[in-house]
Length: 334
Image (cartoon, rainbow, N blue to C red; front, side, top):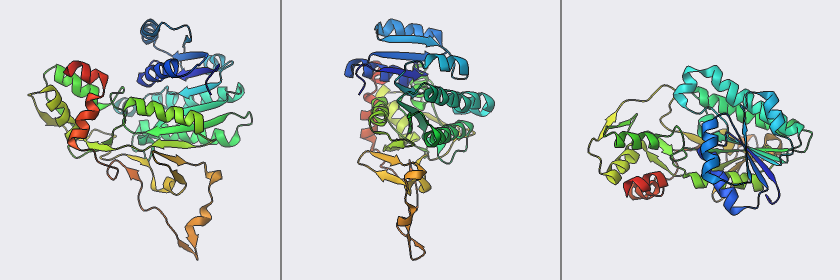
């Protein structure tokens, strides 16, 4: 479906952007990929690394409505990945998170509708479900803006989203921190040993986004099912892989963190379709709630959401294998 098409990636110099560009260049016949981001150094590095005429780079910020509208001309598909996603940063600067994650998203979706873009896929996070921190709250609003646009858009543009848990070794995740602490010969800092997190390798996150591009319907949120691990086991696996001698130091949960994350809420499971590897959370307008009621009582009403506590827990050996599949870890561990 990408043959001869122009794809725009907001926040395209991040970990997601680099991986999806590699995938599109090697596995599709895309006509052009536009990288829209605000960091000229990262664009310079990406341009030199890939050196591909199909890549076009555009400096700009999703907060700048005029610039966003300019870059949308003749675009066929959009992956909206631009975001402030560091939980502590968003806690200290909540209005900055609103400007990027909420208002910036509104700019992107408005420009997509104005320019009759075929489909937009917005990237969300498990922190948007029952959010307790600013990053999660703004990502939840991102999803609501997408859903509202899906209901009201008159141009024929399809708006859908994806939601996933901890993408391994992405910016802001715990693994780059553990690796840095190991390289500095420091203790690995663990917030709560029994805290759980979904673990999703970056290539699988890319698969989810491409699946949404191909199969997502207007107003869908697609969720990739993922196993989980405790933070303690993740740290211990890193220590064993690198034969690290400093051990672990427990520092306590930081402000804005949950002990367990939720990918699909109890309420969303009411309208979710369960596929082998994915959940499809349908737009409210697509749902028939009558199936939940029989003689005035609930029928098959879900009792709990899909969380990092009740999903499949990886074994210790599975965690090590998953870590060694990450090129940044494998290259250093030897």
